[in-house]
Length: 251
Image (cartoon, rainbow, N blue to C red; front, side):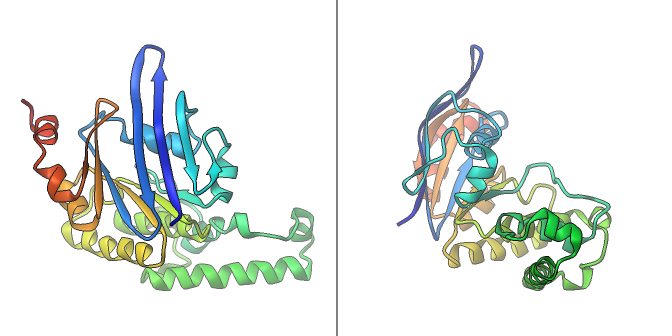
């Protein structure tokens, strides 16, 4: 089984420990949870996995490929995609244009061919448009294809970001607090989408504050506090772990 594997992953900012000796396995075809109180180091972990922060110590592998110190574009080509805690879209561009950006790693036409409007580039652009529209239909947003992304509701913007991540056809997708600010109906809609990711064989690392949401979706959950893993196991196990209860509620 293909695995995204973090081994003894550590990050120090001078004398400040952001994460230390973190071991996490994210299997393909499953949703794995990563939870913890504010400041636990969850986003630091995601930023190291995706090459946005350099790793101080430890290793990150996708299958047999070591991506520990790889640049972001190499990590993307290795089969990894992410969403952000703070939505990052081209607000003036249309929804479909934002989604099409995600297909960049599959483009084969040269920049010159695109600038000159050569038939090969035009065919590729049309193919990407069709694939982007298929994603919009899957997310029930086809009628908003030409709408400016910045004018969408918060929930719809979240969906656009997820479609853009999926467009790169990753083997693993990291979701950094994807339901923040959503109501229960919106959250449940995304839960079905996340289950679809796993059903398609993708490994999902779900980073969330909403413990109930994580427990409902994940087969295994890891808990961070102060940059260190304090618990791991099934949702029932970690939610009844006294160390986890103390981290969230105090001693």
